[in-house]
Length: 208
Image (cartoon, rainbow, N blue to C red; front, top):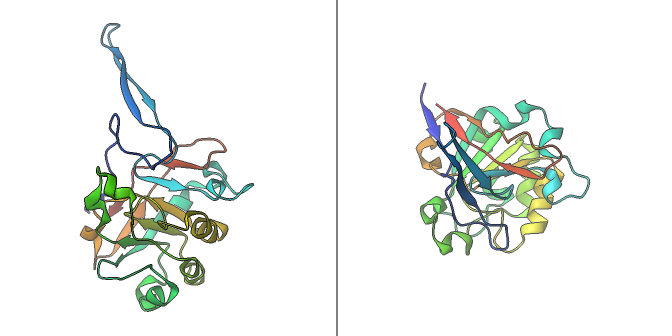
């Protein structure tokens, strides 16, 4: 068994999606009282994180409305999108239908995680279109993972709504997906148990 970490580190002052609350990791107690405690200030979409339907759909299910197994995929597939020009669409997904069918999660390998830590990470990133959501649903996919910070650089709302409306959980800002290409693996991205919330940072990983 080999575990592949697919999560970025959370650090003080790290970059967040433009307009989101900033991230702070501070020392609250530094052994003065015999222990070390840190204080975290972050939004629910900091770093590697997942989106629940409530993120874009009023009245949609929150992270605590799902059973824990919703965030676990015994079978998953890493789809190489690095040579793709334009958005991932239904036609591109259906060209790989034989590999995708039977997988609970699909992770898109775009190589975009190499831009992590720079302003360019949040600009012009690769994504999906609305028709891709329907194709994923038809193929039985319940989670989609991306190396980019969102599902689409221009149509955040409509593509999120297309995916989350089908209750396909979205995991964003993954890293290291290229290590999974051509290999069978399981995928895990469990959120914090934040009652009624729209999303959560996750420690995403794969088991080969």
